[in-house]
Image (cartoon, rainbow, N blue to C red; front, side):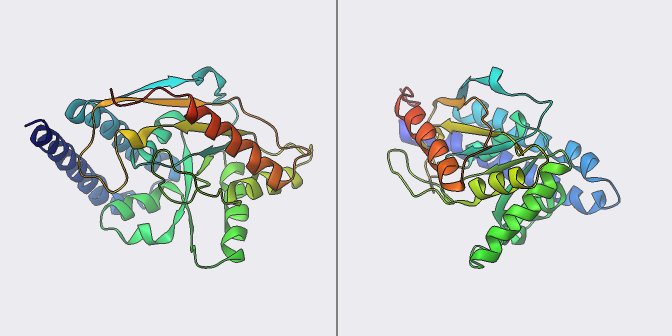
Length: 251
């Protein structure tokens, strides 16, 4: 009976998610004459709605630690662990406006991909090797220089809770590149972010488990004087230690 209830609640969520995605997708072609800033303001409420909607339908709430560490007056690079789709919905509600580093194949998804293209993501070909890294560095710096935040999941894909995956260097290389090409050698600060969203919304799972996700925002740090490997290690060590001490999201 309980499992049936979870299916019903998940179905209600997916209906709302699909309808809202359809709506923003249909709106997207009409936003072509507008600036990126205007398009973003019109489209980003979709993320707020779905964070709220999953709480209403599936009972998934969250508790944020370290919100006081965020300085919205100075944009930076957000490097976070990746366990589910949930955190991709939450991040734009915390760090607006934000550009994602993502695989270009997402643009092919009807409606969702149309809207995605209007918010200046950093779309890369993951099979392109070193040229993909160059795109992250040059396009990422351009977005940051425009005033956007940039979010990258160093693991590159969703990882189940309790599992570990090698952190890719894209985010660290972007931060190092920005610092090298700045007058003061500071570039943009890195904000490490950790969470345990995969406990409530597991990878490839239709069912969502009710609970309270913990989201932790670390103190931003300068990459001045650090090489990309040191940057990557610092982020990975902080995230893994933070996730380790989080209370279970599902009671």
